[in-house]
Length: 320
Image (cartoon, rainbow, N blue to C red; front, side):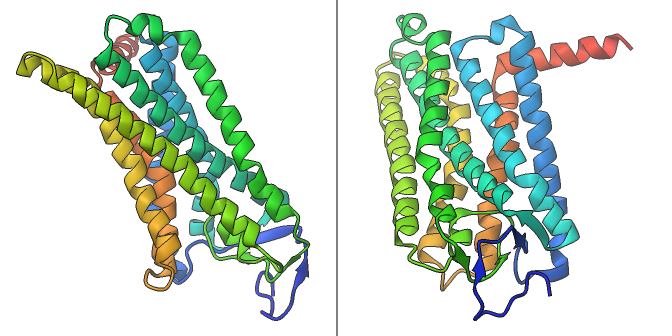
């Protein structure tokens, strides 16, 4: 019986795991493809369009929009690292995943989540300089510095997330080959390990608190500076305009951190009160909702992007 071993058996390091999707939903899982399928399609089309607009329009090749392009590229990677496998499991049922591919997915999901959080912090700092020091903004925030920031965030994510798969790879025996999850989440794999997983648990907790905690503190400090600068402006119109430049970023922050907070709290503190299917659903929504919403938020709320999209669309349409 593939993927259904006796609970008292242990296995040497398996060549593959079996992902079950969302346990307890059985055949009803297939209906969830109607939720996650359109979310992934929206993420592909929205972020792909954003990247294309920034590429073809030289007026959008400014630091603010280059940061937005970095966010869009991260969102594309994050959605693609989870959605194809998730949709396959939901539609076709439990499926095998090679051991190496499982560890790779674990790395990319956690690394890209860390990059996304870092990009949101960089965007908050960008807005703080734009509102607080508008005359010095062109000197302080340059395209080169945005490039260095993106590289630094990528290197930081690799450095702090590489231990996840390495800490799992050191174990030689597992209780089962079946992962009761829709993707290879670090803690879902650790639950199958035979041995002392204290280091895995502590590193996972420390990393999530440190990365999210530092980024959230930085974002809070940036918005404190923004609020201070906005309140010093002389007219209500000036205050409204200054705050309006930050509104899209605030929406994106809420879309990323609120589902993330719910997912984290249910995993750490609600194991015995929140059903496992709810926790797994939340973790998938946390990873797929921001990539689907971010391009919509920026596309609708940012005039330059909206105008360039309409101009490109009408130009293409007029050719036929």
